[in-house]
Image (cartoon, rainbow, N blue to C red):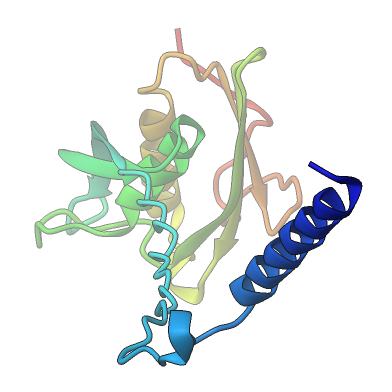
Length: 192
């Protein structure tokens, strides 16, 4: 093969490669100049994201406790077993005290129905429960009513064996008496 024929074949080869590369970039054309009958165009896919799962609320814990009410004459306490609901273990004391505010028995009169427990905290290491009370106008009882009120409060919190002492505040302050009749010890110690 002569030098000229090799050069000719080289040029033809480069031309063929150039044509094939150029033809690859053409869309919608077939060999021989024919156009395709149908063009397949990919459709965009839509990604549907499901909403983030909503956290399920923590189920409430339940416990049976004793609740204490007055008889109709404010002469003695009536004990009832009630079921309380609460979220965390630290809330059990306030839930038990709130049970004193209502009664399903018409003969068991709540002494705490017009009272708000504004705060409660328990120091586990010392066994100290601190509560703050806000009195409504119907909570002002006579001396026998105040005595029953204090008994009901003590019996309610001291049914929990971990509570060793009870600190009672009225409207955020330490007071000598809750209603002016009975001296209020500070703190109230668990009876032996």
